[in-house]
Length: 370
Image 1: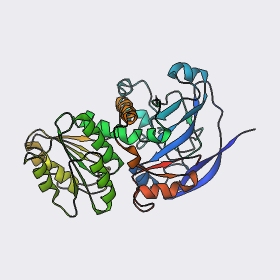
Image 2: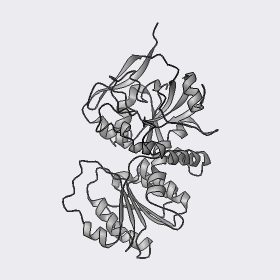
Image 3: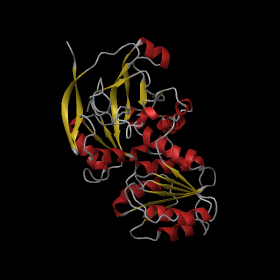
């Protein structure tokens, strides 16, 4: 007799339903993960508002849980056993291309769900693709042999490990892509969970000056940024952000700009170009493909010898570093993990991250067994 479990299923734009789904049989080359925490991020907010591209789907791509069933081939290949607490990356790579061999699964064609409807990525894949358990807003997740999992360090709770995705993005974008290091000066635009994780990464790397910008609705987030070690925080609706950057850096400007203000238009990009030092600065930008920029100041950027990079996901290495950073407990992560919801509250959880639900939300956790 088949076993039924619960999952929150997106059935349309801004619409989800709590439903029973069938628990699949687990073959030798697969595993079943009991989901303890599924984080909600800004990407979920934008994706939730879109119409379905295929059939209904289970969202949730920041997943931590215990391995409940582990096939013999899966165990032999992966080195994991039943009962292990793991963080699951949302990529399901091919394992054969050059990007997979580099640990850069974010660039593997098999994970490119936006362009390939057959690509599988946790939190974005239709339930029409068997066995359907491709999202963390569910009691369980199905793990095929190409799932990428990381051991959660001893002593780290599932909720703490649930910050691994934004933390790995922060390390990737700040340290690996942006090149932040000892004595760097940094401007981080947007104090959401991604921006705050960029701040923590830069602080731990030894940056000498870190400035974080936000708007009037980010008052609490800017307060947290100060606690995490920002040298200055700026409400761009009340202050001249460029003037603050010049003051904090003694007129030199910053070495690195990290723009985490998806959907804020072109103003952060223009500020970033002006805020960098006169020569050789780097700007890492997280943006949506539908954002238009009709008069991009390419001349200004090239005259300053700047490097422009895209902030797109994370690598295997950055996840390992993120879990290590979480285990260090250098920062009070309880200020970041602000809200917890059950499966029946997924709609409200997503909207809270978008600023129209629970007040003060930064990193929100869906706990399927709550």
